[in-house]
Image (cartoon, rainbow, N blue to C red; front, top):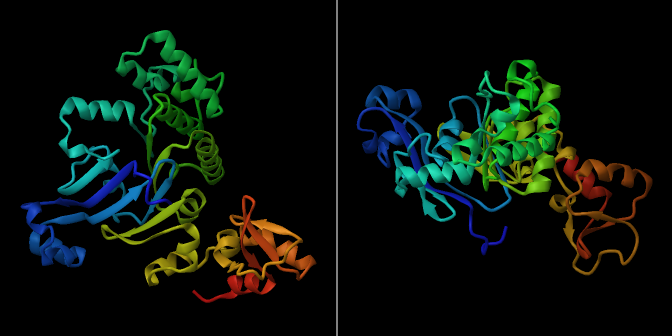
Length: 343
């Protein structure tokens, strides 16, 4: 990511502490105590502790952690469902803590949409009216908002279902409605708070593919919360591993799998099939003038799994390319090393 790109979302030293005199916990020795000891000594729970990160336009930033790690609290501070105890949350450079009630409503209506685990559909309203609800709140004329709602329903695979009611749809279809509702007002930022965790595995996989397809088409800025590492690796451009209110590691899927920051992250990634995550870029050697002048090439973002059949047929090195540019070289030994290397 280029340093010249201004972040769409940025958190600077964000804390969320629950309990008496919460502000006194920030930066104090009590903040670093184990959770149980902190609670018994101070009466406070530090759900998020001094978190800083940036998300650039069009990036999918995934926050992954176990229950109680603070990930849902963190994402809900980005649109001020929860107010931070300390720190800044910046949307396009503006600190949302400085917004008055009216400006905050405008940001929520037009810039940010959220998809929750529980669909929250209005049972007495048709699907098309559920999707158009945010536009109705904005005062958009009825014909225009219903037309927009039908368009978005089609984009998530629910064309023709607009006149149905929520109880006529399966759980996966209802979550598609939730996604369509979030997209209807064309937000700049999409927040996902474990949206697929209650779905059956096959439906969950289908919804993940839906998000990936929409992201290729729309290039929204997304912050996605999950407790599932496989989901994080599949969706994220970058992943933050969260534990006890702090980020343990932030990196690309390849970095998290290939170079876990500590034993906690290593335990998460131990059973991940490395060949499905590591890319040619992550295992290549710099070309340094010794790349073959001709022969086969491989895209830098191709996963190692796709290289195995190639090297089963030939031991000739492959040129690794980004567009028309040769950026490195990879051979059979690089692939084997990536598959067996101890983490």
